[in-house]
Length: 232
Image (tube, rainbow, N blue to C red):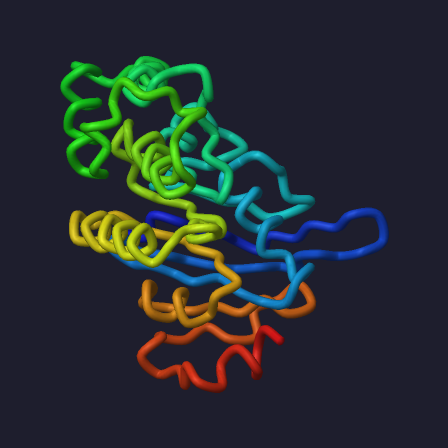
């Protein structure tokens, strides 16, 4: 039985005449964190959008926890939580109201209790009655993380999650990722900061001209030369 929670099989995607992804294969296990990187325009965001089901590939397939994102989206999408540099919350709602809204949207049991748990986990309990619109960048990202975790997904897609955060907020976010992985969660991350990506993840894959040119344990990577070799 396949124990991979993410299976990307022979995925290709082109925009007009330009092939962005060319027969991509990627398998990720529970408890594994993967840093996807490459130069601008390499196809990172396209791949994440296809994994999340927002964008359909021209060919190939994606499954999340055994559910095909095209054939069984109602089962596949709840396996996923998405964090990006955009908070994707409602600015006019309070912190707690935002989380309760998303908890109800996903049909979470005992939503009030789940909201309280998340507020404690991400350090937002003192701000539960504050409108999202007045939160600092760091606090807003904490709310975004709580939103992504509200339905207890198996997988987190983190697209540039550290953008605009101060050092304390970066450390807090990294700690949340560690806790998520310890519970057998899976993380796919993109970031322009190679040092952060290599530090946070166990595995790195590099996209180049629509294909993976590297798939390696981050422990075997020379962090000092990596960015110059593969991203610059």
